[in-house]
Length: 210
Ligand code: SF4
Image (cartoon, rainbow, N blue to C red; front, side, top):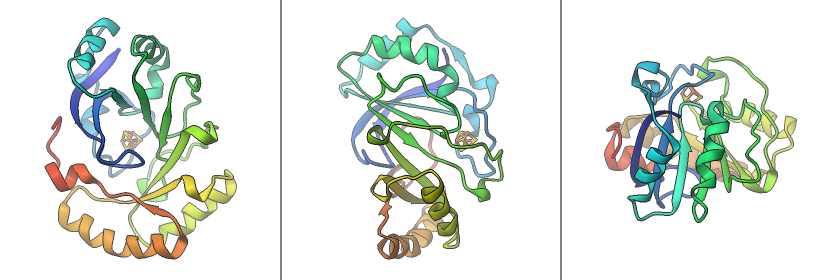
């Protein structure tokens, strides 16, 4: 498996905000978002080829039984992910994906945290793949209040339940996050959509592998 890093932290975003979790960050992505905050995970120079046994051993060192498989785009390595999940039977498996690659792991994954990219990401505009409704949350990164129209079109086009949508402010600096959070919180109230902070930035800034 091509791994960028494995670390133990708190889930900083989305449905499981604040839960202790082991993070397996895989290497490589099929998109190139302008504001990607994990560019180091796109660079093959930062990849380490690891066996499933090596990865399992590291994951099991930590007390939490919540594994977040992230990237890059982890669904580029589905075959290897399946072998890993089969070794982690009592773990809750959360996969963070950009949603553009069809997953064959629905029977094994507990939650997809899907983050479709809006136009401001300035990357390839690939269609959203189908994910199981009861196992998927959609997290949209918001740069500007006007982005809400794109989110609403997305919800309509792909028939996503509003209760499965989270809006998260764009930003890797606490000051810009705070400013965006203020108007985004009001927007969430107005549109009846859930807000997601970025706890990892508040706690650790842009430090890697906290
Ligand atoms: S999809 Fe995610 S990992 Fe890939 S380039 Fe965009 S922000 Fe970065």
